[in-house]
Length: 461
Image 1 (cartoon, rainbow, N blue to C red):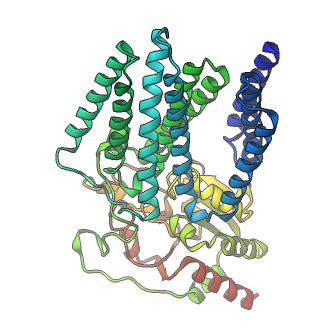
Image 2: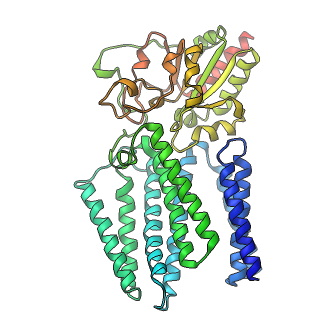
Image 3: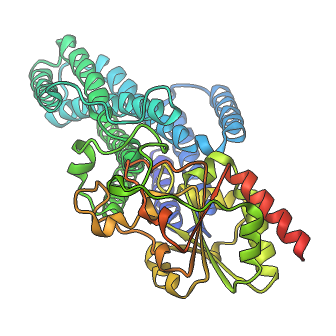
């Protein structure tokens, strides 16, 4: 039986690694997810069978009930709510690690080794921080609490004291593992720290926070694996933790900001309708256009680059956008999509959104691969995006966006914005491109505007 367990864990670990590798490409991501799902199911079933905790009937019932809940949630969740769901999943992973570690701690006989006692402390702390931090991220994304940074008096000193308290209680727990109050205090301090850690982070930085909390959930699971001496849990948790940290760094690089600045910079406004108007308080006006005007321009072009943003997700306009892209392509117009790494409110948000609408993978381009194409493009169509195309990032040194790599939409011959209002982006920085002579501002709900554009294109065909 021991050989079956080790072989199953080895197979599950290999499938986790293969699945993670396949998640790196949009074309293979779905299959990578399936491999990872099978690996997790295999690891759970083998662990329960070998341990004898429950019988086959309970295992089957648990898998069926859990699977049905997952299917229902996945079917009912809207694409606009996907970041919130990911945040909750991170929290679920964290609380699972905390509960398992605490239940194992309650079974201790007092003869445990130092490494086991230390990893119990780490699992309790990281798992609980992940839970409460993820709940705050969910609340900000869901609009339950305001998305702007919330900074308390002496906030960083409070966080430092909480960290020192957690370290102190952790040391006491390792020295006196039979005194249960230390473990409870660790959980309590971690719960508070998770809240104070995330509330000063603004909406613009949510992609980084989600990636970081995902990493925390993996680290907590890996620590719990050491507590249980479970190799597959150690490996799976380490993979999630490492990939989450790498993704966090990639997100920071995409914004040209350090992780320290993201966590402690308190950047961002309450929502995407922050400050409005021209930069530096100048009195300028924009020229408003209609969907029919936009269709007339599209009739005369040879190339279009579409830049999707969070406004596209809010309007659920991805399907009608796909229809528009197909109409333009049928006319011989070169249509491409430019994806900024931090567009949307979670890593890969725009890729997932467009994949749901069956937009072909080969027309989706990352920022570095398409930025040079804008100067030879007739129209850059920006739908619900702002910060990722704001030229202030290049020139305005006192802007929170300064230094952030952006999509070079302002190099296109015509720039067309589809927005609900003149509101600034999450960073609260007014966009000077709105007032450029070659910019067309089409105001309205993205789905309604694109639907009108599609209707006009069909009438002209």
